Length: 114
Image (cartoon, rainbow, N blue to C red; front, side, top):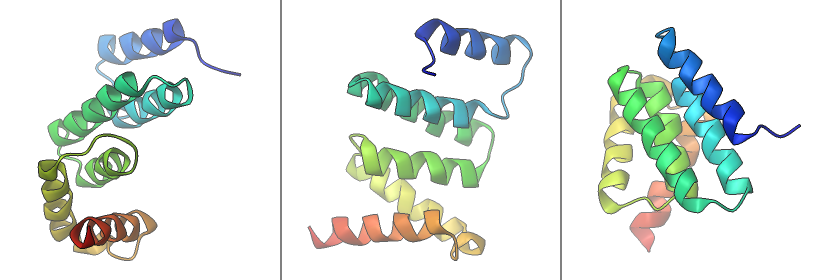
């Protein structure tokens, strides 16, 4: 069952109204995936950037890693985005054995070689 735009808006309004920001990063990433599936690249890119901003606002480096990884894999990541991802990996040595960390490292290596 696909979510409608109004259902996504309703979920976002609920989170805002009740100050429930803990899942907003994941919400924005889900919103981006849905938009990507619908061929709405600009909407997807904006949702991912909102996820990055929310993770930073929450001071949640793991969530920021997931959002920045999504940005690098699917959206128009800039050189500054790549630098931010590399800096984030340096700050998360405890995550070095995770799949997300490994994917981010591979992406950064690929960019270096290009």
